[in-house]
Image (cartoon, rainbow, N blue to C red; front, side):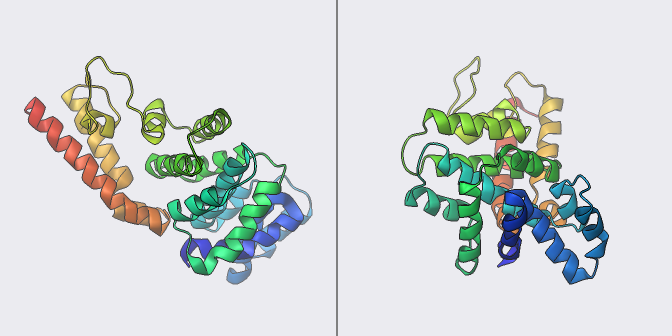
Length: 260
């Protein structure tokens, strides 16, 4: 079941702390497995201010943070413009590759997050903090949320406003928004559907040195081996191979065009 399997135990946290409690519950469950529960039980019971992201990261549980936060973000998105539809739920399962064996537990978490009055913004911020070293994962999450929003029809004003707020909390730039939205940024010259500069997230005015540095950075951020070593969920690691191929193809095309 991979990282999704961890959600099932974490859903119990909703009964004591809302959606944020799910993160704490998942971290506590991991702590129980490792015999270190008392190290976090005491400050929690004493009412000390708690940051769930730090609790989960304390045990290296970036996978749990990812699974819980994307489920909450998807649930809140589906609810933001009215009743949740089956098309939206199916799009969530498809875009985040929810395994059938975990569907029941994830469904409970999704439903509880949908009905909770808690804000989604702390979850987006938590995701951004946990994966601050990998903008590629954050952009993929935003892209997946766009696909969910469009599952039952064209993007509406409430969905777009929600996604804008998620985008800001994820600390992504305008280029990332444009790619996720499916539009091409304005440029001084026409661009085609496979614009290599858009793929690298740079303008055509960038120097050769800037382009080379950007290509190297994107390769570091998106290489599957690098992602796996930083605890990125396996499903997103699998998708990274395709992104790396696009990045390299874009760089090769730019090199040929510029004679670099």
